[in-house]
Length: 244
Image (cartoon, rainbow, N blue to C red; front, side):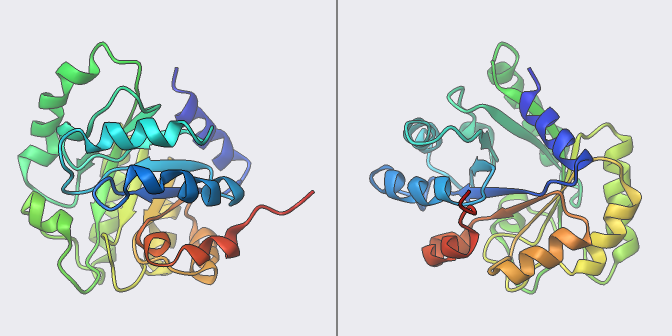
């Protein structure tokens, strides 16, 4: 148990950077999975995240089953709601929306999820999720009815991340939001990475390898990319594994 989390911890200790491809069940048809996952398998991706802010019931499970047919990469649920939980995945990020103050997304949804998780084989990874302002309203804001932390308020972002660690979260996830106009500033990532001792995930608005490298250098341990691959699958060409 806890294999996926331990692998992330071990990678952080060895300064091995990780990459998760985020797949939204409402944007990926099961009929397109084999072709898409073939490109994922040829890339440097280390994880597949599945989820979205608003997903049709049962769509997540159908997609996960299909993904598992085509890859040995760990499949991790990145849930927008308890309806997205499926036992067919390997793990779930048990997200607390620390940037907001809506009790449903701090503890309420988690209580609802217990009946699905208490006898589950899913690896549950407590994760502090922090939404940072990126210039447009995101689906996370709309669904959770919360506001992101302003990107200028670096102290608040850092303190929120540290509070998440002190509360016992195993991962901190800095998010610019789906379809973000730009990635999170590297100075924010640097400040957070300096203050926390747990792995740092960064996602949103990352559309090229140069941005990825800058974010890794700033201190991210795992990067999540979703929309960029959906909009331009040729991005995978920049991320192919090096041949032996």
